[in-house]
Structures are given as C-alpha cells and as structure tokens.
Amino acid sequence: MPSLPSALPDGLLAPPPAERRIAFLRGRRFAHRGLHGHGRIENSRAAFLAAIERNDGIECDVQMSQDGTAFVFHDASLERLTDEQGTLASLGAGAIGRVTLRGTDETIPRLEEILALVGGRVPLLIEVKAPEALVGRLCLAVRRALEGHRGDVAVMSFNPEVGRWFADHAPRITRGLVITEEHARGISGRAKRHLALWRARPDFLAYDVRDLPSRFAAVQRKRGLPVLTWTVRGADAEAVAAMHADAPIYEVEDDS
Image 1 (cartoon, one colour):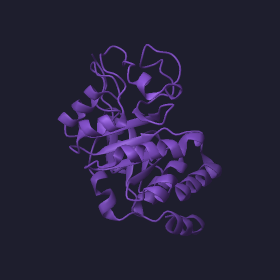
Image 2: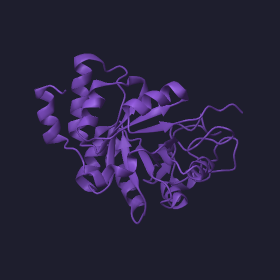
Image 3: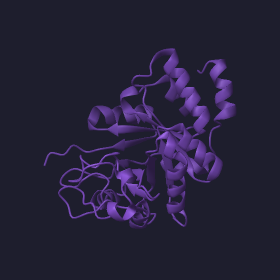
Image 4: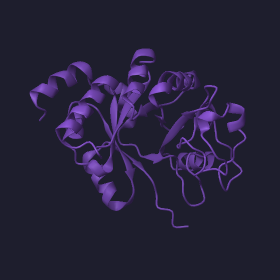
C-alpha cells in the first residue's frame, strides 16, 4: 500500500483516468517501433503494416524537423538507421523526406503519413522524443498531425513536460509517462517518480520491464492507471508482463 505522504498527492495531483480513456490499452499487444526484424527496419511502413497484419497495436517514436514537422524516427542522429550523417532536427522537412532508411527504398515517414497508413485499424502509441527546449513545438506538431484522426491513440514520453503540455492544451488525448528505475533507485528515485507523475498527470504508465515487479508501478496500477511495459522480448519477459502489467510493448527476436 502507498504511504500516506505520497498517496494523498498522487490522488490530488495525478487522479486516475476515466475507464473510457484507457480501455483500449488493456489486454492489447503493442509492437515496439512496429513489427521490425526479419528484414523490416524499425519505425518503417513495412514494420507498421506487419503489426497491423497481426492486429497488434503499434508503438512509434516521433522527432521534429528543423521547421516543426513531426517525423517517425527514434534516434536524434541519423547514422544508425540511414546512410546520412548529422541530426534529424538540423534538417528541414523536405530534406528529411528524401532520406532513405538503410537497406530499404523507404524514406523517413511523417507522423501524419503513418496515421493515414494505420487508418484507425489498430491502436497507436506515440512516444514523443522532446528535449526541454522543444517540448511545446513538438507537442504542437503532434497535436496538429492528430487532428481528424479516427482511431485509438495515446502520446507518451519520458519527459513529464510532454504530459503536462497535453494535459493543458489537448486534454482529450490520452497521455502516458514512460518510466525506468535504472539510475533512479532508493528514496531519491522514488521522489523523482512521484514528482514526474504529479507534473505529467498521466492516464497510464509505460514501465521498463526490467524494473517489474515495482512497488511504485503496482501502487499506481491498483489505483487505476494501466501499466504497459517495454521492451518485452522472450518468454521470461512475457511472463513478467502477464503478471505485473496490463499490456506488453514487445519485440520479436530476429533470427534471419
């Protein structure tokens, strides 16, 4: 059970969501960066279509171009996933749209393009990769891309300022807080998690599977916040997710 000092602020500053906001998260599997591996690169159209084929939800990552367009890409830099150098944020949307993902003929997709591709067929989790200086601009770009989207969708981030932005400016959009306890153990770590929770006011948590079972996650789950868990690989992690979370964000091993 939570201690009184944390239980009272949790209830006041981060109240549990209405069930209708988060029902689509429970009992669903989410493919981490799409169903990649086996020749499909992460955060690609092919990976997203493969997840849709399984009727699994999709988790993707969003970065921002220099001129304020949301693109689906995990890393700040281009080197790991493309043959280009430098950072995505240093390029305009036109230039990014010409960069191909390594080993494919696919370009880096805009968020609005992926929303159209998914077309509401499966739920979508959008992890917003926003450093402090870019929170407002990137969150606004994501909100604009989501205008008119029909389908279950949620935004989430390690940065609690993302949750705060959506709570203040787009409260109808379901929002989550991504958490790892790595390098944040003990009393100071618990304090940081509560502060992030109170700031973000999330509807759900996305928790590092390596930290489960977690007392913090269990307390929040008990009071009504679904706990998703990442990145679930293999039978052992699947068992942990089944016992301590409401949905796995998973990857399959690439044995190709």
